[in-house]
Length: 613
Image (cartoon, rainbow, N blue to C red; front, side, top):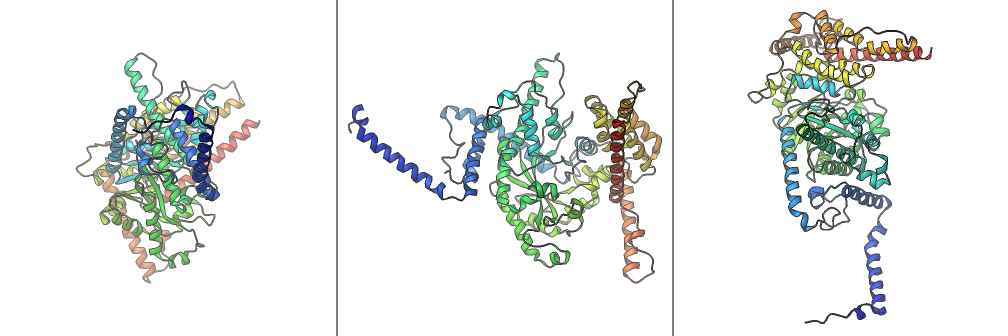
């Protein structure tokens, strides 16, 4: 048996000196790889350490993420990953905790996969909680997306919500929890990520950003709001006599990272959106941050385009001459890298490239680049393990059904402008796309929809300032009767009624003694407008009757287009062109949107001039 050295021998000055030399040598050897790294790699390494430190302080044990996916810190070995060290005393507790997390992730993934045939595309200023509520009244299985919420805005409001005492330094700022903070006002945060006063069913929160730390905190905010909602439900059971607080609904089925918006404000100055497609490794890092922010309890999805104009100057003729195979391989590489760590298994792909080198508007990016559905279909065929949805150019329910029938490998189709332009046209979506599966009875007619939406409108009117919120509430139902007789009169009356609170506020500024007459509830005002301008036949027409009429209208429009093409391009009679064909509902909606914007500008000018008197 080897004799242990005595305390005196271990503390001998020569031994101490030798140990100091040995430690110094080991430190220099361990730091030499870092000294050789370029500045960008060193910054990324430092950011990874700072990010992991914030995760540890927030109590995120990583759910094994670093043991499986350690690309965020390539300099760490798997065994030495920052969040992989655990004490043996916590193993049983962590196993139980992981089981519940895995169950939540599995349940939400099943909701995501089971309701992806039709999804409402995220649209700024349109797919707010009011329009999503309307869609849920029409369909039980349509997957609804929120407007994009930027991570920096959420993080800013999160910091304001937390008490100032918790902000000693940046690390403490990142580690503070909303669950532990008492008496904070959730309203500013709910403005970005809230779901109203009712759960939304299958729904996805879209986030935008390019900073891993900010996206982590944004996802953490959603995770903590879910915990706060659970606490509210527990308090209702324990203290039913207590005054009920407004519910915090933030129970999304998944979080989506925006990698497809080509807007100059987003992809240009913001350096996120479609610009992220040029750096798939960063996208993978961002999605991992989102995964960790939710503590592994929510699926993470990515919405992107088929590519960008990176590396060449876009022209219509030049683009058509470029290799389609090269374009597809770039898209395939992007998807492979982003999905390589197993966090992302769902992609929603707009079948156009994003033109970033020119100052193109989002509208230009929807019209100028041609659609290439073949790339999305091929991707769905080559990656059956992924959930691939097609976006772009599909505006009708029959169009959705046709795309799904033509390519059985596609998991879903995303519709944006067509849905907003005529939401009632999708009322039969559950029956058409999920025959024999959905037990959703749906509304009997649009009168029933208005009655149900009226309850939502009254709740919103009581909770929020009508001068700021009423126009958003009524905007959601402004195109519910698109294509019907007197639909424009209904929309104008609705718009006038929505401006009354603001108009009275301006009158009150001019004359403080003016007295406002008592107004009926907002729901009653909506019903009065509908019954005044629309016929009973329109109000009480069933979804089946409406869908049959829509199919007939589409068939007639197709015949008319065929006649025009034959006459114009076949050398027939002159003077007939596509301009004589009736405008589509989407074009009518675009015209109405421009009128609404002009009205809002006039109101703003009126408010400024009156306020300055």
